Length: 187
Image (tube, rainbow, N blue to C red):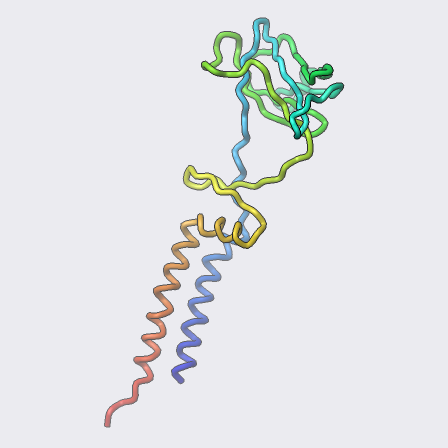
C-alpha cells in the first residue's frame, strides 16, 4: 500500500513536470534579430563594397544586387579584387544580395555616419553557416543539437527551472504524506 502511494505521487509529479516542459521543448525559439552592418556613403551617394568568400579571398566576377524593401535598385559586378560600387544611393537600410546570400546594411548619408563607421561594405559570400540563437532577457545563448546544448537551452528558460524546483519540493512532500497515511493505528 505504501509503495502504491509513493508511485502515485511520483507519477503525478512527473506528469506535472511533463506539462511544464512540453511547451518549452517543442516551442521554437524567438527569431533572431537581423544583423545590420553600418556603412558610410562616400560623396555623391557612392556605396563601395568588397565581396569575399568564406575563407576571406576576394571573389572576382560575381554579381551583387542592391535592394530596398525587396525591390532591386541595380546590380554591379565585382572586379579582380572583389570590389563593387553603386552610385546615387541615399541613406537608409538596404540589402546587398549575391548568389550565396543576402546581408542588411544601414547606409549613412555623407557626413552623417557615427565616428568609426566603415566606408566600405564588406560582404562575405560562401557556404551558409547555420546557427540558431535564443535571445532571452538580453542574453544570448547558443543552441546546438547535442544533448548538452539542448540542456543548456532548456535551463536558460526560467519556467523550466521553476518546474524542476517545484518537482524537487513536491516529490519529498508527497512521499512523506504517503508514509503518514499508512501508519498503523495503535490499539
